[in-house]
Image 1: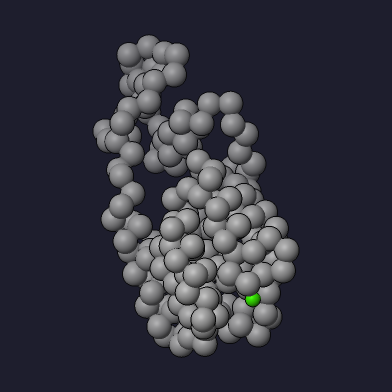
Image 2: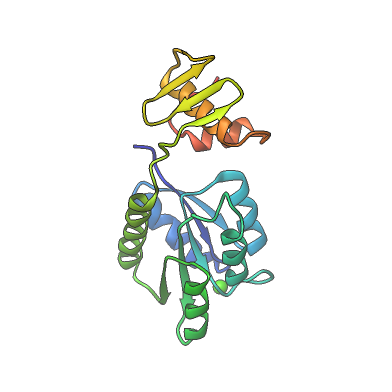
Length: 192
Ligand code: CA
């Protein structure tokens, strides 16, 4: 299974590096951001699988980052685990209402954080509806459930990677995907 990418958004370097160390030890790929702006940029460019998001950030704060991620169609479902300081109950409520999946108050134990993070990822995996609806564009029909592609009613022979690429592209007509973005999306698949 491809390693999941976790984006850690935290302006305090010590905490960010502590999280990086613990997550990498568990086999996750880790990206770090010290500001909300940097976090949004990485979410766009690298499509992480989960965000660990500190609420108290300079500039754009965590709540605003959460709001912007939830407000965009292609990042709406991104799992978010919030980090808050003690005594920020109002922020916890606001964050959960904005769609954060869970929260931890600082100081936290890395083991508890890992357990919460795994639980969030597990819940999200169960919620993702299977993309089984067929997509039609012009004379091309892609049936993800059957792993079948028809062009003018005739089946095409595609490899699994070609199929996934085509399925992604027909669902996003007009969109431009960079090679890097596709590679991140299909970690493990070699795209030439
Ligand atoms: Ca902070």
